[in-house]
Image 1: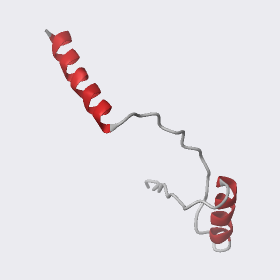
Image 2: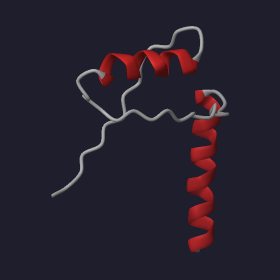
Image 3: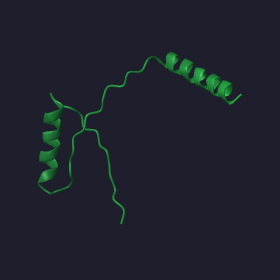
Length: 67
């Protein structure tokens, strides 16, 4: 038997904890789910142009290293 996991994002209220509590309250009555809160860190990425440039650099370095 395989377990099935879903990750669902819920629109936030004033705080993440309040949103989590709202979801738990909505699903606890019928035991619809087991809820866990986890924080997703802010991703520090640049613009699309900088990501494309980094991708080009990576391809160029890969060719150089293989040579």
